[in-house]
Length: 323
View (cartoon, rainbow, N blue to C red):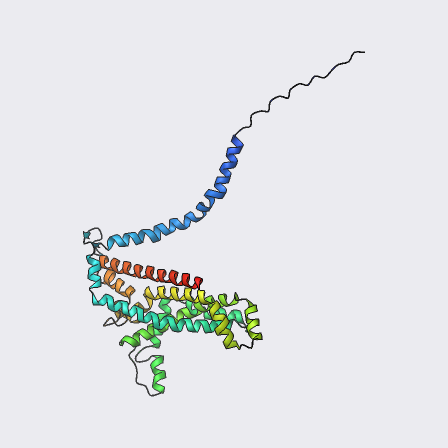
């Protein structure tokens, strides 16, 4: 009987693997995990470069020239003369002082009232959603509408404030003419507009405070006022610092309220510049006196002030984290 033996034949060598799929997978990985994040944030940086960085650099370049509004194509290099002229001008220092005083008398009451309102809204109230929307209404109102209404309220002859003071035998006050009276009136407008906005920021931060802290303080016998001072305020310290910085930046850029408060005299910050801020001075130099170079120097001075405020905020934040 014939038998056949099977001989072991070597397996054919595997076909060489194509590197094309591997390269495609590597390309997809690179696009998904490396290039995609940059593509997502690219629109922001493009808009920032077009409407933020370029105007900033261009304003700095203009501040080194003598340029008039009607002849912007005719520039004369003056170097730092616009800055030295600005620093030697009493109007700049007066506007800087006015900006500081208006900022203080508007920011301090504004944040204190916002903190109190947020504390009240943090409790369970009926129609709480209505009250939260109501306190935000002034922020939704335009600067022009709010300022014009308050200009009538603080009117010398027929204003509601003077009518109320007359009830108590106080003589009418010319709110616009006086330095402190005009600044108090403008600070009132700013406080009215931004208190509700800051109150909602504080309210959001309060709702993030753990309830266990309040329960532990209640077990220790702390009253609601003591809980507010010992638990709520320390927990809101970063938020309070944030609102202080944001309010300070807003006060440095204050423009619409003083411009519209005095009517035709508002473009000069009052007849004697009694409530002229840095923003109003910039507008007067650039669009009133047509000195764009000097206006650009004031703009860069405001920018450097904001940079200093941001640096102080970063320093304080770092110290609080270490504490």
